[in-house]
Length: 157
Image (cartoon, rainbow, N blue to C red; front, side, top):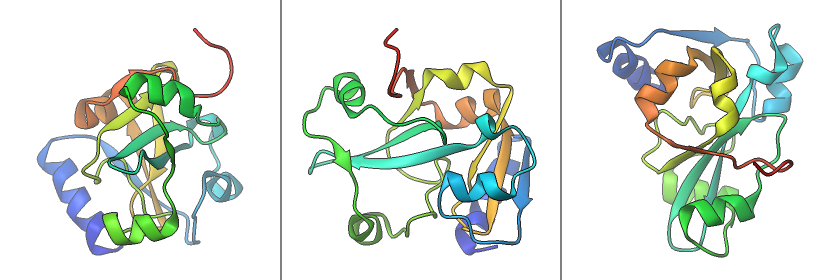
């Protein structure tokens, strides 16, 4: 368990939030990697995507099987020209590698897809590519305080 995950575990405990560390004993960079080893419902696997408008960075949080709709996200944030952050930007600006992004430990505005409300629990990257975190959705939302809107591709609501 890396130092960032150890710090996060202490923060979660301090905030009296329930969580479970998932040790899959393998490297997991993407939500597809997690699906290969996760024994639960694949819809409960969530991902965090870092996007930028060249000035600011934001975190989009959605189901691993869904695709992010950048136009919806731009509208919600009131910005133009959003794109996925490059690995080099993750490293230089956020000191993270792909697969190390945890929505609970980044200092960025987080926008969660509204479908999060359809789940009781979800799991997502912990900041350490060998571990995941499983939490109750209510606790995730309480901790993150994200803007919750429809940001996935597909049906507009």
